[in-house]
Amino acid sequence: MLSLTHSLRSLAIAGEAIPSNYKYQAVRWRKPRWVPKAKSKIFKVPERPVIPEEEKLELMRLYNNYRTKVKSLRSYLVAKHCTKFQASEDPEEQRRLFEEDLQHCIKMNNEWNEKQRIFREQAMTEELEANLSYARKRLEDELIKQEEKIKAIEEIVQKQKEAAKNFILPENIDEAIDKALENPVDYNFAITLNGEKIIGYYNHKVGDKNENVVKQ
Amino acid sequence: MIAYELMILYRLMPKPELRTALKRTSETIFQKGGIIRKLENLGTRDLPFKISVHGVVYNKADYFLFEFNAPPSSIASLFDEYIRDVDVVRRRLYKKTEPVGFECTLDNEMKPPPYRNDVLNLIEQAKSQQGKPKFEYNTNLDHYPFQK
Image (cartoon, rainbow over the protein chains, first blue to last red):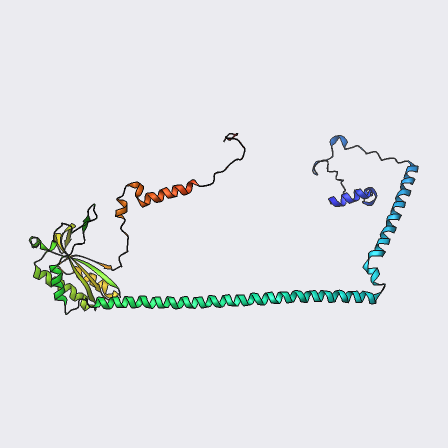
């Protein structure tokens, strides 16, 4: 709407071109759109500019001259530079130029394609090599891991085999019980300032307290 | 193969009776298809609190530690069976875990503060924070001209 009114104003035909029933408001950017016409100016009718007859004729002449010159200049430049008109002059020549241009374009395109092909092949080989080395490394790592796992398992088995010699079974339970009764152990210890360990809660052998053996 | 630890407390008895009680306990493990790895006597000790079982109050007990392997399915019944033995004052069953290794730093901790590792670390930390960049106003003034 704004641009419409603007262009209408610049054409100076607002009054005649717009139908009388069309709501038309000029925008002068003087106050906000929603502010109405000042109360004191509601009934003011702007005076029409009066141009003397001679001056009007002179202006019209000048304008006509100006338009004629510009029009001729435009048409001259169009005729000189527009390819559309030139093409119609010599179709064979046009075709030859077009073919030449096309050949040049194809050549250039092929060059680019060749360059890209080399680049692509190189990149693909590199990627493949990287993938292969990654896979190889993973395989090696996996093998190492498995080896380590087997080693750890064997270590456990070896340890258990070693420990199996000292297992207490129904055959040697009596011995073990006697041994345990004779050798009481005490994990409690105190530590001195020099770092010496004093083992035993009461600092004497617990098992010797035969006086404790009473019927409760 | 899961190893378990059984801490079992017997009432104070003469040695032959204690021996039979121990035998009974081990037989139960063997019956379940288990094997004993270690049997330790931790001596006769005062109980940390008086314990009342089988209608008697005990203040002292003989402490024994069994380390054994047995099928996990039999553990619950083992645990249940032991307390029905009238010679047993108390029993606890644990899964055996490997002891966690640790480094003794007592030697270092006994030193005077400026030589201790933890204090040295703190000093290092404070030093590293001193080098932090400070914001400068670049006003060529030795004071801040506005109210802060």
